[in-house]
Length: 115
Image (cartoon, rainbow, N blue to C red; front, side, top):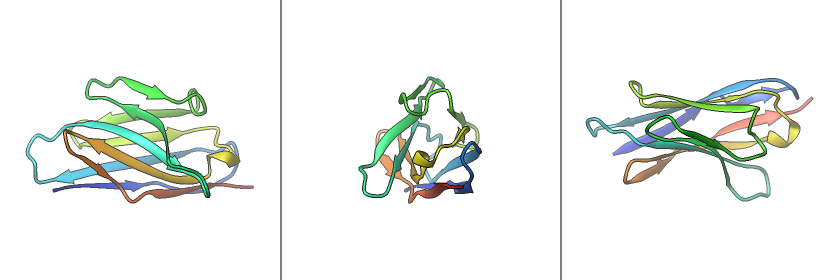
């Protein structure tokens, strides 16, 4: 069984920063996969915003490129999303998705950007 848990959300002013973490726990020895970050704003569909592969290759959607940075710690089986220059429109629930052949979602962490 594989569990994914996000943390690090909160309330921040416009222009501020937050760092989200995604921790994967399992009873599968040597589990490794790709991480993707999604977000869902109120009344909107869930959208993919960034990801990082096994080899560390990253991708970002245009809206967050240059402001968000995704990274991973393979030893800890964790991923991180550093979010800088946050905007009001970044307000959403942020989800971590982990794919290893199977897949698993976290329950999300709320990010609110407000003055």
